[in-house]
Image 1 (cartoon, rainbow, N blue to C red):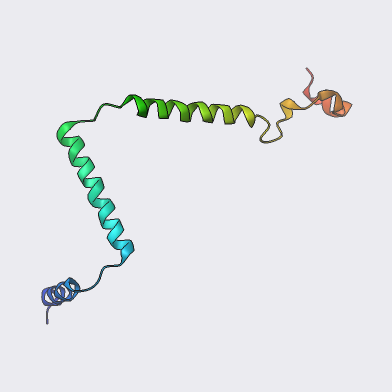
Image 2 (image 1 turned 120 degrees about the vertical axis):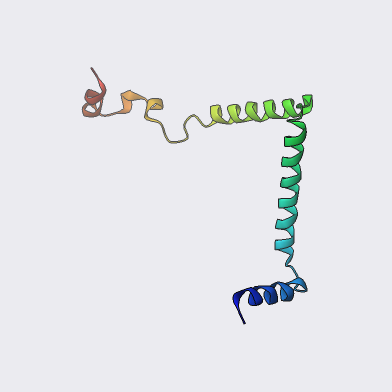
Length: 95
């Protein structure tokens, strides 16, 4: 039996084999991505709706608010009271 016959036999055997749910989901995702890609290639990008723009803006705003809340996230030395630092340490930072 040559390699072509082995491949042909493997393909015939695989036709009736059940597909796992994970693989089936992956195939469906690939099909959806391909359909979206074909739509964009054929018709170009679709215009963003006002709701989509507002959603993006609200995400940016919430990220900015979170950044302001976390300004001391790594115990930043710029936020320390330098009067509490030893004289030796202060001399290092003074001009």
